[in-house]
Length: 65
Length: 221
Image (cartoon, rainbow over all chains, first blue to last red; front, side):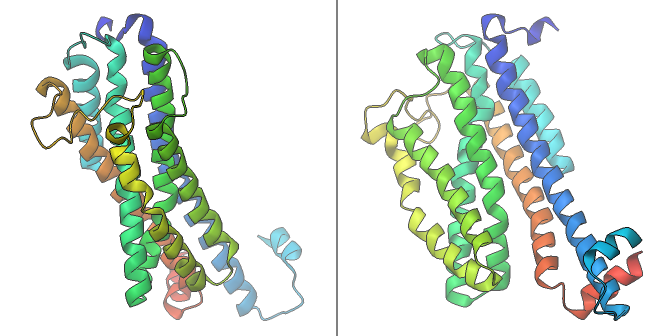
């Protein structure tokens, strides 16, 4: 692991590469979460529509699901 | 995405281990292998956004609107990465985290343009109206791109001059240039992969009331 020792610049280099990792992972995780949320929203609305009851509010829905 | 991982690991290996130490900056210059590709991406993604914005305005193409708006958060994240790694690089080299010089300031402005695009899109309820407004903003902001690129030549700045994109021979040594280019290609592939993820979601959001979406989701669970 000596090759990965950058002497007095260790902190600066690892901070940069660490942040790069975080940014890359963020760019994968956030789209995945948004997709999941959207699909759940659509499914919930479809469920409401199919069951036709206009008086079902979202609070009741949350208890059911 | 598989190719991205391969190139990214290869870029890391050749950048951190194979590339020699810089005679002037020592080990610290190795930040270049993430800093410069991130900065290139920040400009490239903005151009993609602006061009698809123009296409969206002229031909009213829905897919162009979606590519434009899906690019914004990715571009913003790369701009942020370029700024912060630059700052981390600046501390040991210039002995300061930040200076208000032309390159740094114009890149910061780019970050705000990305934020503006995202905020504007979210502020307008109707997606198509929002996309048109965003396209105009993105196109106006294009003026900043050449300013960023040429800032190190037009003004006397602390930021070092271009070492790769000069018309004559690049002044960077080949053993450092190769990992840099590998990383640049890896970042570009990553952008495409991440963009597709976002495009699919945005497309689904716009088509959520259509029958095929309902059918697809019903058959899926």
